[in-house]
Length: 129
Picture (cartoon, rainbow, N blue to C red):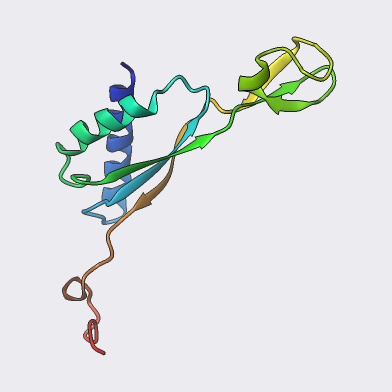
């Protein structure tokens, strides 16, 4: 189950970025996950729920996953096609001289922080109507 290792890496990265930017709470993390990355989203979510409870900065934060479709490029004819539907064989020319160009990534796209309450802002007019 490498999903737990991935979750720990995400948490460490988000905590580091948070500290560098003066953030003490994170409400959500958006992760781009390649369709053929080998990461199982259900396991990832389960690991996330368990692990964020151990982080003061991320406790209760949601993990939002956006799936990046896998695409393959045929070096013979230049066709870019959906990998899952056709595998390594180009549906255009039948060549196996192909390589994955998208869909294997696992990247943090966004870190969301809660909106400050009027009491937390430095503005004297905060909360004034």
